[in-house]
Length: 419
Ligand code: AMP
Ligand code: MG
Image 1 (cartoon, protein in one colour):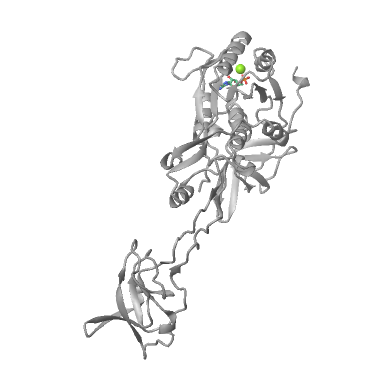
Image 2 (cartoon, rainbow, N blue to C red; image 1 turned 120 degrees about the horizontal axis):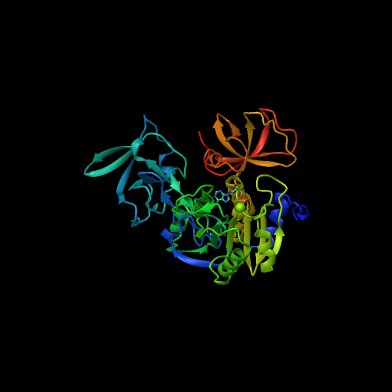
């Protein structure tokens, strides 16, 4: 059966997955609940920001022509006609020979064409009136934030599909979005399979292991802002697997079901037979890269079944390379952002083991001066759990004889860079 399985490259796996994206459902949420969510529609500036010419510093609004000849020998003194604070508007236009004391953010009076920083001026009193003394000319426009200079009316500020973080929150608030249209998270179901696999809250008998895949996948999904539901561990029994997966789909509890285990060639690996029994359309059942070669994906009733390999390292990589882009693309995220962030880095250790397939190894990426350095997080065996927490990236090692230290490789961030 395994020999019938035609391996697909990552590009081909993506192509097949992206032909069947989930429908995008939008919902409105209050701004403060929009943090971390995916924007549902383009945000277009419906007005200029700033909406009026405003002072960029505390100082004096005045007319540049009035101070053209100012010098320390011949200072110009302008009559201070009042004060305007942020939130207030000047009462009247400014005439020649006058200055208006103005605070950062306040509207520039008509007639003024610059703001002179308060620190560079001196106040003098003459006959009960206040004058500001200027000893150097400056050009028109200085320290005025012009209408629309931050964000111009009509421009697309944020495209649909963008994740709402601090900067996006600030833009949305600036334009008065008390409510934001965001994409509803697809519902992700997670079920580990395996007769040896025991939930974390149950004791281990001899030969058993705790299920580490479900908590790990749940964490990955949650970090992406997805709603994930964990099922019990399913046993390696064809009839039970068929019944439980059928039930989960029939109850319409999830849009995407991630299972781990049972996709390989062992005597108790039933997942492909489950897909067959359910009448699911198999998109692919073998990958042309490591880890997780037997990873399989099937589609049934508009829902996607990801059969990740049970090996922790393989299900981890499978999530990052297949599940993550699929779900994010479904939510309208652009392909480049749906995939892991990509860079190139210099390998600091030789990779001596030859491989007939490209490998995405768990790796540690560090920034050193202006270079990115990468090294394997440990052995690249997919059964290891420790290389997951030691890694913050995947490094792509091409098929072949291995690579010498100093080679430049493609790396994909699974986490922030470490310094
Ligand atoms: P399988 O893909 O079912 O052949 O499993 C491959 C390896 O991964 C076996 O050594 C399993 O014991 C292990 N494994 C399977 N499921 C899990 C799980 N949920 N958590 C940790 N290890 C697992
Ligand atoms: Mg198994």
